Each structure stands twice: as C-alpha cells, then as structure tokens.
Image (tube, rainbow, N blue to C red; front, side, top):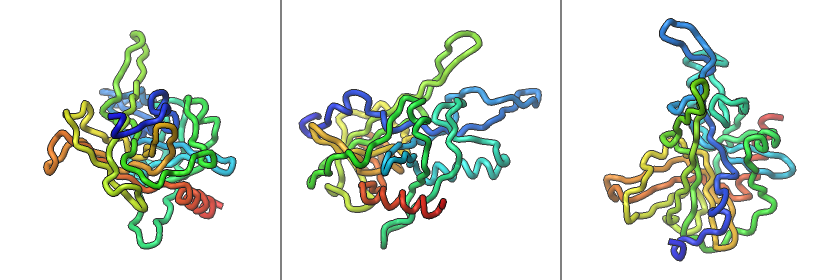
Length: 264
C-alpha cells in the first residue's frame, strides 16, 4: 500500500488538523408536550466538513456550497435564526453564514465551493490549524494518487459521560485513491478497487474536506471533496470513489480575491 500510495508523516499523525466537522444544528427542539428547549448534542444531526487555510495573513474556511444550501433551506423552512452552523455539535463555536460562492474557471461548470474569512482564534480553540498556503511545497509534476479527509455523519456517536451529560464523538476518515487522469487541471475524480469492502460505505458529511497530494516527504492541498462513495453497481462493492473541485494555490487565491471583492 505504501509503495503504491506514498504518504508523508503528516498522514500518520494528525491528518485531520486542517479541517473540522461543520454541523447544521437546530437551536431549539420540542419535547412530547410541545415545550421548546435548547437543543442538546445529537449524533443524528447532519454535517459537512470545513477546511481551514491561511493566506496573506488572514484565515479562511472553505466548504461545499451544497452544505450552505442545506443550512439556508433549513432556515427558510423553520425561520431565520432557527439553525446555526457549528464546528462542535451544539458547542460555542458558531460559524455565521457569510459564505460566498466563487465563480468557476472560464469554460468550466459552476463549482460546489463556499468560502469566508474566519477568526483564527476560533480554529485554535477547537484544536485545529490552517493550511499555510504560502509555505506549501511545489506540487509534483506527476501525481498518481490523492488523500481525502472528512467527517462522515454516520460515524458520529454518543458517549455518555455520566447520567446528566453526554458528548458526541466525531471521527474522521482518510480516503486514499488513485487519480483517474493523473495530475488534475480541473474538477477531478479519484477511484480505486479494493481487496475488501471498506468499513465505512456512507461518506455523507465528508463534503468540504481537503484533498491532498503526498510524496514520502511532502504534502499539499490539491482539491476540496464534493462527493464520495464506496461501492457501485458498475465496479462492485469493493471500490471507492471521490470527486473533487480543483483547489491549487492560484485557484484558492482567486477565490479569496473574489470573496473580498463581494464582501467589501
């Protein structure tokens, strides 16, 4: 595996350092008697993933536009301020909806990307760190595989601390697969056939997470995951698929400029 898919030390330690679960949370819930109370942590609340990057001395969060649409649809259905987006389930770390959808490259389809500036202290408080774009090594000319990181909704589970308190654990997954067409120049796919059926087959919630390239010594960002699946009718259940929006340094810089142009 390592010979076919070389991974640097980053992926053996804290590979989810640059991303977090982005949970769409109802602010109030109603009990059997119709009484409304503040929502408690729940393992069944849907989520996406948000990727943190730093450029030009500022910090940003990038996720998928369809995640923001889910949040906005919930607010439209249940009322303004009925939901929030949080990087911990019902925690204090709220991300307000100030996301902008960047324009696609010329001749390309609309991209499933949302970006906004974020207070770097927020990221520190949840034990994360941004990808420092200006410090990344140059991407190799030849690439054969990539690594997608994210937080599947199905892996969230409840841990009862005592009779009065529980917390929600949110494990991440690391999906290593071949790049279908080598080093991508636009929206791309990853695909691999596996020896066994993967342990996790529902990757809902991984959207918005980073996709990295890696050698044995270095890594960098190459994309943002917008769709993942395990198994298919065509290739069988022992396969894995990832679709990504291209996110090179130059492309992310364009997203950042457009964000500031639209929010000035």
